[in-house]
Image 1 (cartoon, rainbow, N blue to C red):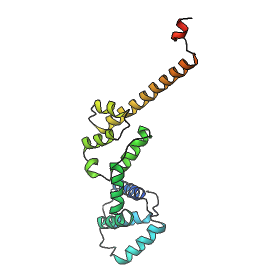
Image 2: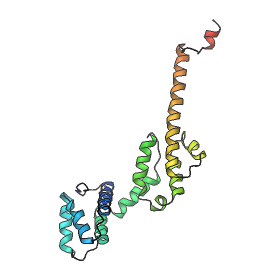
Image 3: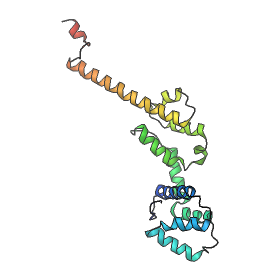
Image 4: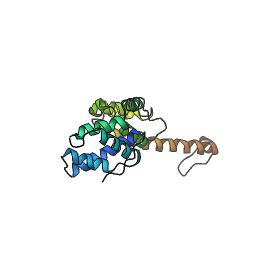
Amino acid sequence: MPTLFEGGPDPLVTDSFMDRVEKYINAINLVIDKLKIILTTYNFVGDAEIWWKTVSHTHNLDTITYDTFKKLYYEKYFSAPKRRELKKEFDGLRQGNMTVTEYENIFTSLLRFTPGIANDEEGKIEKFVDGLDLTIRPIVAASEPTDYAKAMRKALVVEVESKDSKAIRESYRHNKSTGVFSEGQSSKKQNYE
């Protein structure tokens, strides 16, 4: 069963709740609209439960369709201005100081608000790659990934390799400045002694 839904201002929680409910509805192959509504509203508590009681007094629950119910639900808890705001956030999304995994998690959670890109594999790859850090982006783009999963895997590999290379360079600089080298390494200073 889906978790309880209290309502509130977070559109991601609103959308996530409905996704879980619909996943459950599909899993049990529920097709009757009235039962879908009962199942969904059974999980309402707090503000959501109060809202639903109000709606149930103004709508005929015997004839309301599940699509109408969802429309009312999204109008209340996921308004068009909130969707536009999240789309703007997605449009401006950049990896910045995040890891590739953190960036990808936010990318994926915001992607649903841009159906044009979400339904277009090429556009999705392009947007993901364009938002990557400048040290990762050119390598991933040059690999010309043909699907989103390949772009993500390549970005993760490049991130790990980049961190390893940076650690090696920093270790070398530190050793060079202190004159301490591991076996097999030497400095010009040591070669002339």
